[in-house]
Length: 453
Image (cartoon, rainbow, N blue to C red; front, side):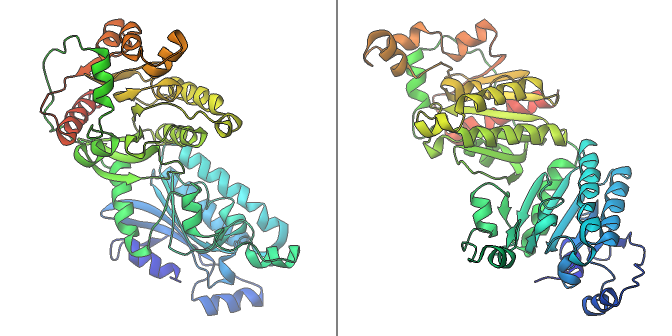
């Protein structure tokens, strides 16, 4: 278990830490003894430092001081540091290791979690990043307040992370808490946190994340495609977008982006990432065709989380549409699928950051519509948008699927037709020689050109 000072040394540029803490004057013997054992005067250290030359504020727990518990002095220290970071417009990096609020101080310390949370929400409302690293263990009121409010939240491998500590649960309930639930790995798998990152790798993650959120945009360099897109055959476009070697969102990030930080993916059919498309910082929310999964409620919640993250951080949102459709199942209905589609549409229609939708391939049903209502909509030449796959439309109209090609032509689903109707604003030509790399680069170049305007 790393100490607070070891964490600071691991994350910050050498010699850059400047403490903001006033010495804590403890009048209780147990606090003085705790300070002697821990080597710190309280359960949290705050201050300012540099991460690869970028100024940040830091809040770091010291577990050796009464299990990192937060009393009145520690709470006031955190709140003061957060407010100073907001006033100085600094991103905050927090690293927790705590059993929660301090039992010796009872309810007065407990309610201070509200003041900490309020200060952090004011910081975030100012458009400033709040990045959280959960160390072993992080439980109780700390996890239920400043440990869970990050724009990006990761935990160290094997860390115990949970609201109620397992020892307390067993004492109160008379049975052990189920194993492997309150672990960093399990919470990442369920989308509660964004990932599991070893402390040694934390500087790399912070460098990438701050590189997207703090560093200014750079002029695009990828070549844009020019030329006129002619009329395309609807059924041919459908077949083109269903090819296994067709470019997808993974290729867009691989070949057209830098500094990508993948965030939580409780449903792998949707990808959320902080990245730079040809130098332009943005949040990408993309439907991942490589997973071959339809979109369920969890996928749409992940998409909406990405939309809200872009709004909170004040960076552009890029949605990538490439889906065979929303999930059709009893579980999806019970999970509120229709409501999640509606919430995504409403969120995209009302957020104030620049929004860009890319119709990259298949655009089927409500799952596609959920990511479409951007201020600018791009489409590749063979992309298409339809309320159902052509086979589904054929089944409704003809009671069979043999008329799929006919329905594709009749429903005006092609990118060129949607462009003529004004639904799509700009088309990206495709080439017979296109590979996933070349098409991804063309899409990234067009996105960057539009974002930089």
